[in-house]
Length: 272
Image 1: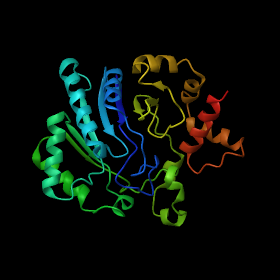
Image 2: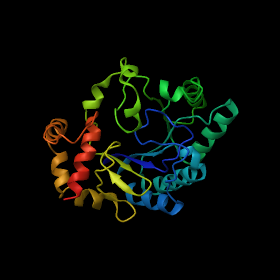
Image 3: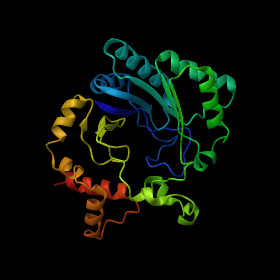
């Protein structure tokens, strides 16, 4: 059983948050086509407990988001998988109650049974109304449409220190829990698919490409990957310690976050 597959439909976003590790924003062009969305779902849904529709911000490509939700729901009705279908969004579409209701109903009607609101933090609030996440979550719960309503972000004072977040002054982060800059989030059963089809073992592992979902199904990709040198590294008992030692022995790798160092390691490994 695969715990989750996160489909990043696009890296475009209506916001340009300073802490965004994928550097999403209005200028980004990457996005899946309808055909690629269908292929990605077909090739990753079997035995998948949860399928996330994410970005970037998926609502900026609303037609593709709704198409993907419908496609996944049709497959769920036929096969039982994916068991859960979740929209992961900043919720910035909910500038009025009417807009919020209209979007939530569309998500539900097209097949979503969960919604994850990711913007409850100071960095999102620099560009959007800070009342939106909690109001949207309360509205979604009150409508009784979804089995699960999540609300998150960096409100719990955790920031990964790479990507665009590297530009945030350290003094500004003094009240944040920076221990996560040295923690690995790898589970081996939570996979991420980028708009170009690359399958990644975790949300931060941009350069550790396992395969491409447009070329093969997820089970074959995992099987082939399990025979690679990269997989042997991931199976290390303490991956963070392994990457940390590698970084110490490679003085040219200046990384403030274990995930950044990990990406550099796997990029170098791929060049061999």
